Length: 212
Length: 85
Image (cartoon, rainbow over all chains, first blue to last red; front, side, top):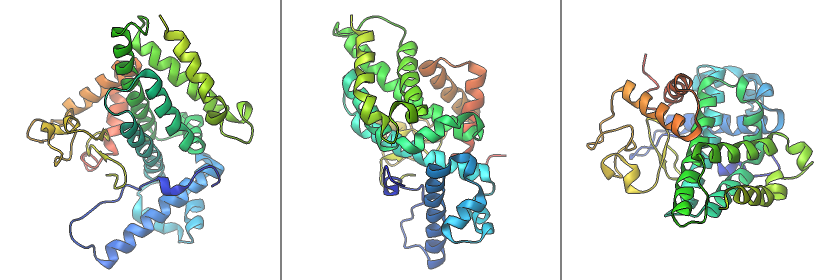
């Protein structure tokens, strides 16, 4: 994986107050390796190429090991998408603290997108083929961005620095814009990061639209 | 729950960072203020589905029935509801 490190992902592991047994530690470590390998395979091959066999091969484990930890491929895929979503929404929650301005919310979102660009673009491109729970994770993440945008827009409108508009339209325009560039990143920024290359322009376009 | 980032609600996955994000403003609870009551007790499943669907509709304008289906799919993968028949 070239564009980012998998250490970004925290892996949704249970925590206990007491020291876990060796068996529990081994089980958790195997689960972590499966998720890590799954994210690598998805980044390289997409979800379509992320079969349970391919993920097992990438860890050097027997195929059946996958099903000890995930009852179905859909459950594994949902966990991979959830992991990306958790990492991105946690970063947004950290960055958009207090009462951020619209430019600050857009910057925080662009930073999270840039950090997870390769995997998140895969999620978007294949969203309609993903299990329902995985697709729901994407919409939950987008709603979190919409929520922050709406709050920042309300503050800007109260200060007279943003015009009246439908806040749902504002969020959907921004989400559509960024998703379009991510889904076609090979055309907008061949071989590079589309957010690094085009993010500042996208932010300027949105701020132009809402200027009073 | 995430161990490196802020905690997320065990019912809907909402990232909880400030006290008001937690049920009853209590950072020791497992759930967010939408999914649980002031005492931290999880609200009934149908109420949580409706609250999450309303949130999706309010933020992105998607169809209410589609939002309910999406909310059910989201909750099905969460620790609080994973074992629900």
